[in-house]
Length: 122
Image (cartoon, rainbow, N blue to C red; front, side, top):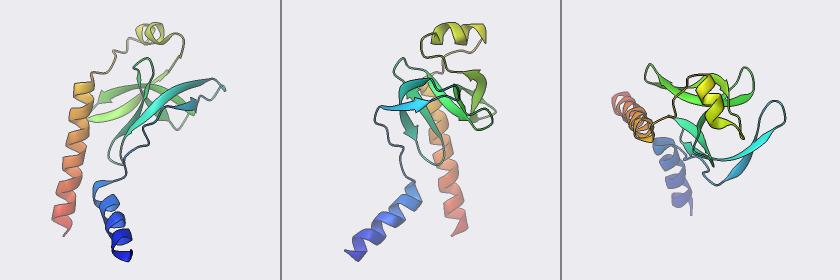
């Protein structure tokens, strides 16, 4: 039993815990809510809404915002996600819907960077 526990702890440290990707409710700063799934791990994470929007949480204003890829980083755009008006909100802010292939490519790069750091630290 101890071996199994030790194995699990080492595995989670090496590979990182995956996000809980079941549909659940998220809350915006104004109290409005929406449903989404969390994806990623400690290297890169995001949420995806039921209408396909990719979001990042903005710590400063406490809102989930449309995500953008900038300088090889997934960042919040500064534009709050609007549950009932997603296409219009992105259009007004000139934010393109993220390409999932680009997102998963970035996630793979972040994983590889982390793996290289772990190999060099030993």
